Length: 260
Image 1 (cartoon, rainbow, N blue to C red):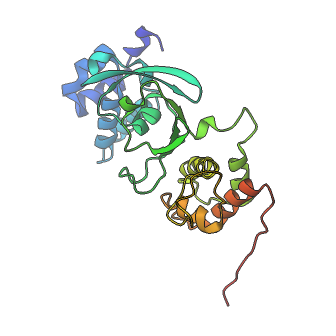
Image 2: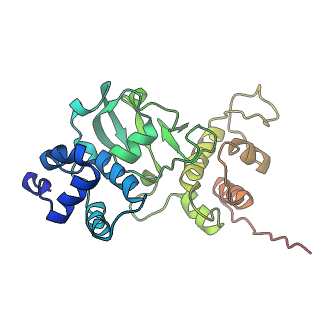
């Protein structure tokens, strides 16, 4: 969007801001509608407005924000730090608030919305991504801590139009229902396969003293290693089947149990 386009408001839109947000009018006319203005307007319009205001608000709320996420001024960021890292193979360099999480950086600054914000407390696993090949909870990981590291999200697993084997297995075995937790489940599953291959023990591994060689992935091992990823739809048996199929390279027979 060109600079002169940022400053243009219709008369109805100008009156809308005069009525609802007079304290922000000068800033809006000077720099355009930013994310803070957008959220504030959304809150105000949710409380009931007049008909002419509704029409003007609809025009504003359906417009793209004036400042793209990757072009925020460093001066507008508190406690800004510069972070250079790779995301899905592409080099990225951003100035972020030192307290900003990796999840918020991916979603709000890089527009990679596959990683989901579920509990935002590191308890549901929906935000799981891979950092240097190891799974992390991106809602508990500071973006600043990823300096010089490589981050892979659900968007980076497929090769062009070819799905990652875990993605294909989830589809085949119906490993998801609502799909909200699926990106985190899949990223975690990819890491589980690598962890077992490296011989990393879990709580249920029989011989934890054995540190050499791959660890066989039984259903119990898979369930334990995936226990940090919650599925509120209860698709756990299908998730286990999908991972087991990728691990073994053999199709897993679907078994159905009916009540009554």
